[in-house]
Image (tube, rainbow, N blue to C red):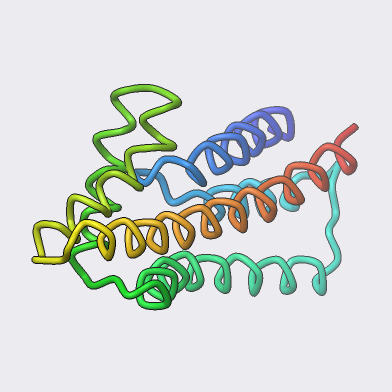
Length: 157
């Protein structure tokens, strides 16, 4: 049973890290569930403080993942049009490949701002803010997911 839980845990952690980039997966919560599965094996025992700390970090990163793009957009003069454009651009970009994942949110934010009536220069500036917030969210999720993967590897191997 432990072997099955360990395999499932690593699958969840890796899918969680992938979900840090893909918007359709919950990302770090999946990685944290993987850590919990490891904890339920006889081979791995995490301290309660460790589990609580990382649970809090996962919740904080999830909250920041929603707030940071809004902050970035507003900081650079954007509107909800830019946020929606960034999100739609990201989803469309997934089907284009790596460049689509990177450029989709930025271009989407610009198109969103232009659709909302902004002038080109202001739309580009707001698009940059949306994109910056989007990237900061991804980076923070990847950092947390990376730490969870690291601790899982250290404990199992």
